[in-house]
Amino acid sequence: MNVLVNAGQAQPIPLWRQLQQVARMTHAVMGGQSLTALLETVPANLRPGVQALSFHALRHWGAARAVRVLLAAKAPSAAVDALLCSALSLLLDTERPLYPEHTVVSQTVEAARREHKWQRQAGFINACLRRFVRERDDLMAEIAVNPVASWNHPQWWIDQIQADHPEHMATLLNMAQHAPPMTLRVNLNTSDVSTTLARLQAQGLNGRAVGVCGIELDRPVPVSQLPGFAQGEVSVQDAAAQIAAPLLLGERTSEPLRVLDACAAPGGKTGHLLEWAPQAQVLALDVDAQRAQKIEQNLQRLKVHAQVRAADAAEPDSWWDGQLFDAIMLDAPCSASGIVRRHPDVRWLRRASDIAKLAALQAKLLDVLWPLLKPGGRMVYCTCSVFKAEGQDNVQAFLKRNTQAVLLPSPGHLIPGQVPQGLPVGDNQLGEHDGFYYALLQKPAP
Image (cartoon, rainbow, N blue to C red; front, side):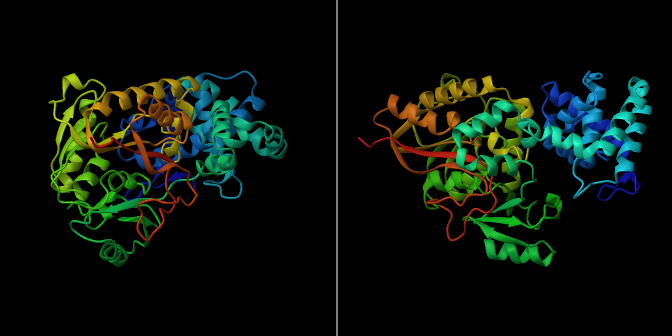
């Protein structure tokens, strides 16, 4: 079988067409472009297959690139290299292959032949792939000593994980190689977890309760298949991200709290805040106008309202009205190292130097927003990062600069695959959650 069939697609799509697009995606990612944005440019009928194959390639890029170096020490053009490495990623796994070897080889060669700029390299690609199939065991043994090939992450990333979480290093790096579960957040104002579970099961969608209001599905499905999604009764949100609103606000409340969601796009936590405190007056900011529009769209589906502004949270003079907030949610821009399972391009896009720059921005946001909090008010600082520079280290430095600030019991760094302790998760643990950092800070009352 040499085709990839998309769900609902009447005509099978040849694998070579998918591989052409995958090569373009991976080439652009290695050039510094986000895969999320790139996928939006792919024709709709090709997009699901291209996304799946691109994710697979990027999760195995370290090994694929190492093998390619052995097969051809002198790299071909960057685009052809991307096609070759994408194909090699499909040949690496012999236990659970996506396609037969001969299909991968023939369809990759066909992809090159049908692209004018790659045609002359078709024979080279064919020779490399066939040699890999013949010499697989020897080649794989040779790259086994290469950490980048073994872990499929850049060396600096591996080193940072080793320094920050030596006891969880293997867990973090291995879990990044597998797709995460699809987790839902139930809107407790319109339904409850048990009722929603029953509705899902009636449609053949099995899952289990996680956290206070979450459901982890056995398999991902399009949101169009989720009962109640269009009506705002459920949202898609990782279990770790669902901690934010309950941690900040405590018990569900009808108080008209004044809340700032400082870096709010795409609006998942904003919606959860308004589900948790329906009478809250929420100001949701994002520096990017298009991303701010996504907040509006998400809130419309949930049938809740916030004041949404495209503004830089680090520049309060441009948006703040001078009234202090009861609570502030600071989901700060970060490396996204904790959600690399969902975004496998992140590991190849980031550079070691990015972490210090991001940590500096996070520290600035903490310092700028802290004065906007009422005495007795609370702030949640969180990042979807497992790097301590963006979590524990940043908060400890903030506390030294602000000796009156109080660090309340907080989750700290959440490690995927580990059972967190002392969290507002009700009777259920978080399931297979993303990597996150949480700190709950309180300003002393006068």
